[in-house]
Length: 282
Image (cartoon, rainbow, N blue to C red; front, side, top):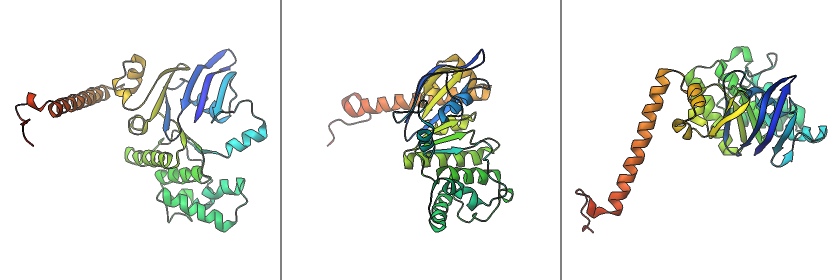
């Protein structure tokens, strides 16, 4: 779990983050969404220590991150995996060496042990035979999966993903979303995702924070967002007529299911009230 308490961040006279408090839940995909300039990228950079907030607290499982010494912060960073927007693979290294890079940096394992860990995470992202390929030889979706394998090879407690679906087609984006969600759930990782992708919001948004002009405007999950009455959020999420229609249809579908479930419960609990159920049958 990562907790933010009253975090503020300014650059000069311009305030970017305005008193934001939130909890990034363990074992969940926590999404930060918002339009360009909303503060979501600055908020993520505060979370990982690239920016220092002007005030407020950031706690990693009750450990005060902002006031840590450099050595203490280094230990926390060993528990963090990072999936960068452009994958950030080393062009001169093959897939195996790219994934092995964090192991080379932070462990004293033998090459055999590191190779075993690399093979395990590559298998987890369905890239068992890609060890010797170079980034120029693989697709954008494969690069993202290599980057995800590198991000989890140290078995992190916290995973940060910056626009993980940037530049990918919808089908490949769904594959990446499912991998991130499943890996988060399997390993009980606290995953924080900065995204513009509304498919991600609807598919894997266990906990969603909507930022607007530096403030946390709304918080909820992908079920609740359908029924939100927040005008700013609805304008951002359901910007097109097609998406507004899809929202209306989904609301009708969910509401209809709830009504049907209530009717069925009533029939089961009060069979004499139904012309279709014989309450005297054994």
